[in-house]
Length: 210
Image 1 (cartoon, rainbow, N blue to C red):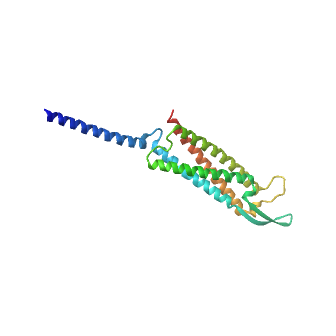
Image 2: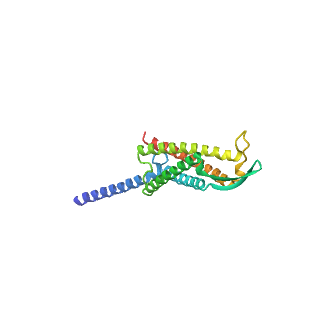
Image 3: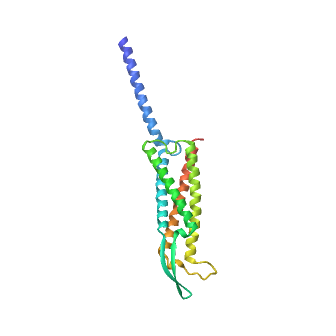
């Protein structure tokens, strides 16, 4: 009788151990399968967006700070030397500052996201951090699109001149400079789109806590 009772207790202990192992496996895989509105797939998407945003912003900054050229142009039969540097325009300086801030912010978020992904924990674990990411993405996104729009105006004016004034198309003489500006603005606006997409994922993360 005692042996039968002991065997029964061992059987129950074995079943409990199996259940505990299943619980551990379920807990480990739940995050990857259905951890609130997309789970791990949403976190991987966030990581990729951060990486792309950092890369696009870094390219925009690199192209802008290397935008400088000296050339000659003719106006009313006289030759003039043109010296174009990005730092002579407040709009371009503003865009460089904003894109540089976006590079630093995206890099920090990329490191944090990558570390948490390797640990198989949520990229945005708390509502406070979700709100912070949402607000930061919104601020940098609006700053990026405003800076890109201002720089686009400068680039367009260089190509078309000023209406009702006999100014030439400076980009004919400053092709390298104008091309750098144009491509930099394109990458800056692309980074804005990536920040906007990140904001959508931030909203999805926020919805987990309501």
